[in-house]
Image 1 (cartoon, rainbow, N blue to C red):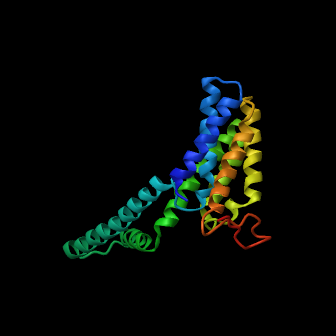
Image 2 (cartoon, rainbow, N blue to C red; image 1 turned 90 degrees about the vertical axis):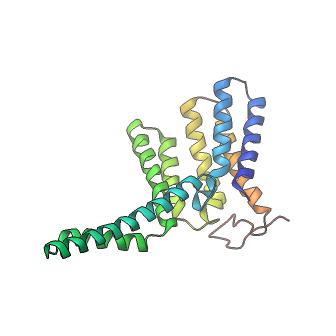
Image 3 (cartoon, rainbow, N blue to C red; image 1 turned 60 degrees about the vertical axis):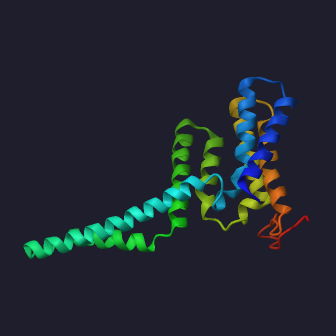
Length: 213
């Protein structure tokens, strides 16, 4: 299912929370943000609305590294022809950059960038002692490297997300944040369950996809 659809469902959940719980602009902003982000987060394990821009950036980075390697190698050849001298250190950098550009896959670079964001969050979470941020950071660091519609699309991931939401609710002191987080994440799994591929809710205990047509 498209990321925009998941986001729309998440925003609808946030709107319901705004109507159900005591209203304030601050609370409404948190309900909508948490529900929308939760509805998208399961797809951090692959290309999605959340990582789309990073995917584009990874393509640019790969091309820059590959291009830099070519330019360096051309420069190395020119220096050798002009001065009849071979610069070993320069050659090592040129060849390394060129090979890295050839070998590095765009998905690998994208995953690395997403994990880097998670590392930044982890640092701030540890520095400020915010348990919810530490949990979110660990989720973001690990999710990109998992198989798509694998562990992030299970009841175990839903339980973990609920624990993160509970800690965030405790931190903010806003009633309903945990419930909104769980509802948003669960909406993603339910929506994907209605697609032809289905969802492996109990993976790895039960490895078959569950589908609702």
